[in-house]
Amino acid sequence: MSLLDTAKNLLQGQNRYRLEVQGCSDLLDVEHFTGREAASDTYRYQITFTCSAQDLSAQQLLRRNASLTFSAPISNLMGLATQPSVAKRVHGVVTDFRRLSGSADEARYQLVIEPFFALLRHQIRSHRFFINQSIPDVVEQILREHNFKGWEFEFHLEKEYPKREQINQINESDRQFIERLLSEVGIFYRFGLQDDTQTEVLHFTDSQRGYVYDKTLPLNSPSGLSDNHVDSVWGLSLRHQVVESTVFAKDYNHRLAEDTLISAVADMTRGDGEKINYGDVYHYKGRHLTRGDKIRPETETANFWARLDHERFLARQTLLRGESSAADLTPLLVLSIQDNPLSSTLPSVFKSP
Image (cartoon, rainbow, N blue to C red):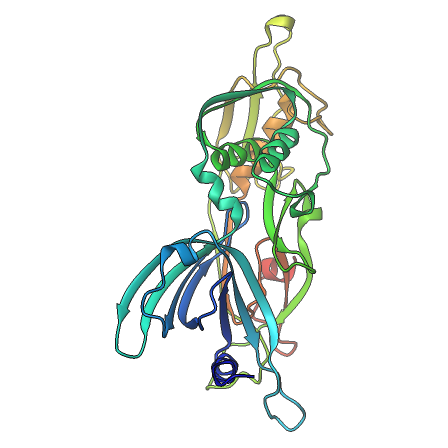
């Protein structure tokens, strides 16, 4: 092992965060970073780092595969730190790069890591159309056009989606188009990590089957400078607001002109929100050809749209906030909070997943 390799290993061992870019052999020492992750959105990590190389170029970094690894030190029974374990790994491509400053010893840089899916915002179509395809079919076709392999995306769908006579993409990027189609029918997505390749995978779902389970953290406000390497949750807050009470939908089908195509009134609280919500929403949109069953409506029918529209309103009603030291929290993760058994401080909404 060379002296340079020894120095790299020593420095990387002192930093809990490791940045690697494909094809770049220089040591990239993470100074600080900010990250944002959300359901049905691409994650974005902006990382500031230092490097002894004074002139890293855009050709070396832009569109290159990159990863940011979070390490969590563990302790043995004697309380001594041992080899750190990997708590989280973010993989994607470099979409932004800049040089911030330089000195005689090193230069400061900044780059942004996003999933490859984010690059689809640069593929813009003035107009194209798809004939006799369902929304999942169209999404899969576009992903394969961008060379997504079959294992790089997965559909976990509970409902069946009908083939539409025509679907138009007009003055939209491929990413905008995909996200618009998915949001129309209530399909959401998240990113996961493939175990063997350690690269990102797109997961599409329309039900709770797409959630991530089996994560529990204790409620414990931080104090002092040591947490004994135990992750926790604190600073929990809760907000409620009035939203719309009901929704009903209507459309017109010239082939069945005598059919009014009006849905039943949808109240997804089953009456529980009658005293706290207000307002009846009427949507007249060209999007369904039949009314559908009132109890179990088929996808893209009048009753389906009315129920889905009301669920969108209800999603804004309750907002939970909190802080945590756990690096492996992800969108669509169902988090169970372990309360203080002696004196509970949790509202009931935090106690049920």
